[in-house]
Length: 174
Image (cartoon, rainbow, N blue to C red; front, top):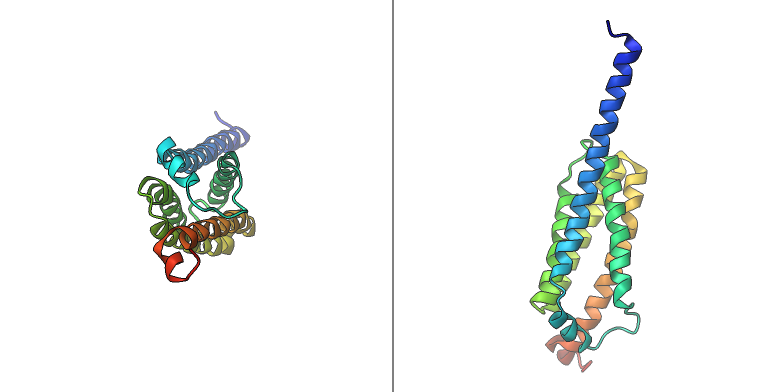
């Protein structure tokens, strides 16, 4: 006969495995977005990118990968904290736009379209912060660095647009 304590221990153990599985899934999902996005940043794309006029604030390339890796972990943990307690739609959409951006910017070499993609990504990050934050303040705050870094990415992309496209010519910048 199984005692109440043994039943509770079995249930707690199963719960730990379920939660661990969820966190693992989210870590795989967010980091897969980063990995797949990086596939579009080919040597040819980097050659094109380095031929552009860039902001003086553009960090070295290795820093982008490092920062995004940390941000993907924050996103995963944030989503883990609110699993099944709020709509995942804004979170999934911000991940989708996060994946679309390197394809549009680097592979298609379309910085103007890239700017639009970042704006959409930031909108859904904002919605994620609001949705997650209404359930867990910690989950909401974990998404804030993602929003801030994306704002910086928007700025860097904007400089590329202003100094390397017809928009810059129209504005008299180049």
